[in-house]
Every structure is written in structure tokens, then in C-alpha cells.
Image (cartoon, rainbow over all chains, first blue to last red; front, side):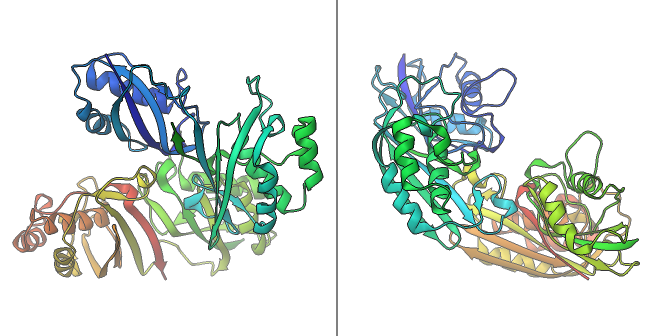
Length: 242
Length: 242
């Protein structure tokens, strides 16, 4: 057996997220089925982390083990021939037998896309719509959010996590015409954390949250002091660093 | 009663086309339901023409009749609040009682979008992928296709049309980076006609079809002499002229 690392892009619109679940369409399920079909052997795929329903990936990373007889150079081409058009294998390469897509991940970058002003039917599954924001205020807020904190107040209450301390290394906000890209890099993210971080920057920029609220949210770990959870369709997993 | 003209944009990806059908999601069905819900009155919506499953519209036109008590200025806002994110009402205005979205249409423009080279997972429902084409040869072919012809050879065999004579006023081919937009304007289109016109230009540019084939296709009305039917996701209804 050898271990294979896949880099994978997907449009999350028509998936119930990454994780395999009975009776619904998932990215993991589709790729595992494709491996079984292509190479006639079972497949257990381990991703760097789950993505929720509707969330996209420019470059998700996952690993699985396969018999040595399968030529590594064929895996990408063969899988792309079988996979549906909303999943694409970007690369497949051999890694060390003890590599783990999740446990070895050192940091991740997500990008959140917002369309300002009028909604557009062709961006409905690709971006969030927000009428207006104050970019300078968002940048001000982003400085409060960066760093090592207990992010319990920036996490869905349905999480199963026990440890809420994470480091947000960097938040970059770029505007071009009526589009806003918010890039968040951290050593790990809690459930819905990027969506709540972005929602907090949006609500801060609209004057619904102030500096004191954020300081208190970190201190008291109080979800009611942070911003809205942005919808999943604006979120893209951009890169996993090892 | 008064007659209302709607201009409508939709992402056709998750619809079984324009036309209402039992048990499946259609654009007509969604809008009719939204009118019933919003204004508590029945609705029969008549479009300028059907679009197939997966085909998009930048601006479809349709009409329906509604009680005079409903303020025309409210229709757009109220419907957009109810409609799903993949349908958007661009405008709603009152027209003459004898206006008919289909019978009064004088010409239509469709645009067909092709991504050249590598496929892209985020364009899978928005464009067709073609490895390469010869733009100059496509333009050469477009000149053979323009004009008034019997287009039976450019029409799906499952059509119910009896009259196959149509006029293609103009075909414009624009390339920008690795994207190709093919704009086709005509006085009317047969089933799959735009998709077969584009497929014929593509196959002509690849040397699979020559000038003689096209001349014979018009003469003999022979579908086997024309090109492939391009997939629906590259096709957009752009404008209906009255």
C-alpha cells in the first residue's frame, strides 16, 4: 500500500458538505465511490477538515491508501473522468505513509466573498449579498480579531469542540468594484468560525457591534456579543498548509 | 384585470427548464406559485419561449394578468422577496391587454459561452468546455449559417415544429482570454437550434465539417451533416425584442 495526497476543488452548491452521510450527496462520498469504481478497491478518504453544505473549495486536501500496483500518475486523470463536473482532482501525489491530511495541517486560508449592493442571480450560490459595508471599519475590526484568542464566542453552539483557543494569523480585506474578498488565515477554525468572524466585521462596520463588545465577547465567551453567521455560499477553502 | 410584463433572470442549473411540469422544479412553476402566494390569485404565465433544463436567462420575458387592485409598482419587490435565489424579477410593468410575450416577439438574442482549455469546477454549470477551436474558421462558418434558411438540419429530431424556416440575423464571436462568447440573433429558434449552430461552428473549426457539408445540410435538411449539440449549461437567453 502507498499513501496518496489529493488536492481537490469543488463547487459546494449541490453537496450536503464534505462528509459522507447516508442517502445524501457529499464530496467525500463521490470521491470514495469514484476510487472504488476506478481501481476496484475500498477507499477511506481523510480530509484536512470538513466543509459545510454549500461551502466551496479551491483546494481541499485529503489522503487515502491504495495498492502499489496502481500507478500514481494515473490517479488524477482516471478520477476526473469519473467524477461529476462539480468535483475536480487538481493533483494526486504519493506522500509518506504516516502523513495525515488533518493532523499534519499547520494552517489554513479561507476566503469569504461578498457582493455589495444588488443581488445577482448568477452569484446566488457563489457569494453572500450585503447592501453596504464600511471597509475601513471592517479593517479596524479585523485587527481586534487577529491573534491568539479563545474563540468560543465565534463558534456555532452545536460544536463538539472542547478546546476553543485558536490563532488567527491574518485577515486581508480586498475590494474590487462591488466585490469584497475577505481572506482569513489561521492555525485552525472552529465550527462556523470564519462565517461568524466575517459576520462580526460586517456588523461592526454597520455600527451594530463596537470594540467593547468584541473585547467582552473574548472575555466572557459570549456568542450573543458577536455578529451574524454569514451564509455558507460565500465561503471557499483556499489553501491548507503543511 | 390588467396585463403585466415581467423581465426575469434565472440560473437554469437547478431547474427542469422553463416549463411547468408535475413534480419537478421549473421557472414557470416557481413564479406562478410566488404570484399565488403574494397576491392570493391564480396565475398563468406566458413566456417568450421555453428554455431547456440547465439553460439560463439574463432576460426572459413573460406576461400574466392580475387584478387591477394590485399596484404594479409593488409586483417586482414582493415577488423577489418570495422567489428562490436562482430567479430574479428584473422589472414588472403594465402592457396593453392584447400584448403576448410569445406571439409579439420579433427577434431574440442568445449567447453561448465556451471556456477554452482546462475545465473549471466553478464554471461547470455556466459554460461549455472545449479544448481548442480556431476562431477564424468559426467566423468563416458563421457567415454560412447567417440568413434565411430551412434550419431542419439544425434542429433536434424530437421537435414538434412544422415550419423550419428561420432567419439568423447575426452571429457575433468574441474572445477574451480563454473565454468565448457566441451571440446569435434571429427571428426565432427551433428546438436546440442555437446549441447545434454553435456545435457546427466548433466542429467546422476543428475540420470535422466543411463548407460542402453545410450547403448540403441546408439542401437535404440532413441533421447528420451538422455539428454536435452543445450542452445546455453554456446557453443564455440574453434579450427578446418586441
